[in-house]
Image 1 (cartoon, helix red, strand yellow):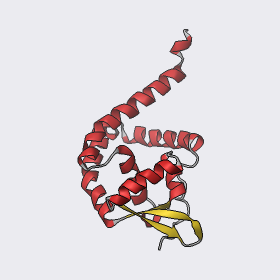
Image 2 (cartoon, helix red, strand yellow; image 1 turned 90 degrees about the vertical axis):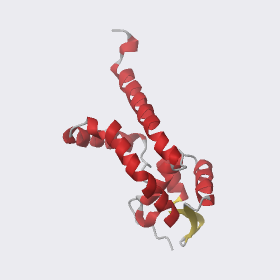
Image 3 (cartoon, helix red, strand yellow; image 1 turned 120 degrees about the horizontal axis):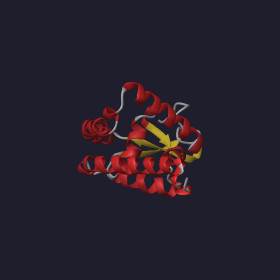
Image 4 (cartoon, rainbow, N blue to C red; image 1 turned 45 degrees about the vertical axis):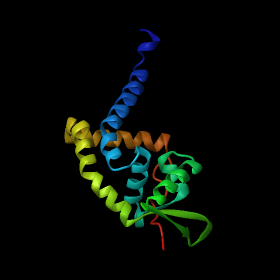
Amino acid sequence: MSPFDDPRLTAMGLLAEVMAGISEKMSPALAGAGLSDVEFETLIRLARSPAHGLRMSDLAAQTSLSTSGITRVVDRLERENLVTRRACPSDRRASYAVLTDEGRQRLLGVLPQHLDDIEAWFTSLLTPEQLADFLSTLRLIRDVVRPCATAGVAEPAKVE
């Protein structure tokens, strides 16, 4: 067997191809809503978080962006009134990014097409059992390679 035929290489290659292909299929709907992939990811993470907000450091960890990278994304979203920043009441150095009503509306506008795209290009290709197994496997791997991916979710955020 050639070292180039290693199944580990095949697994990584397939994973990269699938992610790139799915992202390509979903980008038009996001672009139609005036959102980049990373802006959508930021907004959906806020929408799915307690009180629709996350500490900036937790948001950076969840998105795998640097602190300065997430600051630039939140700056853009804030200029569009999709996100606002709020000071942390218990730590003057920290702030929260919080989804605004306008941000929620923007997400609600793109969500039906986004879910249709997920269904068409991903979940409908799997049986319910395959999907459950796949999600379990992805969480197992994610928890090892990105242990901060759920940062800020375990404890409810107090945003005032």
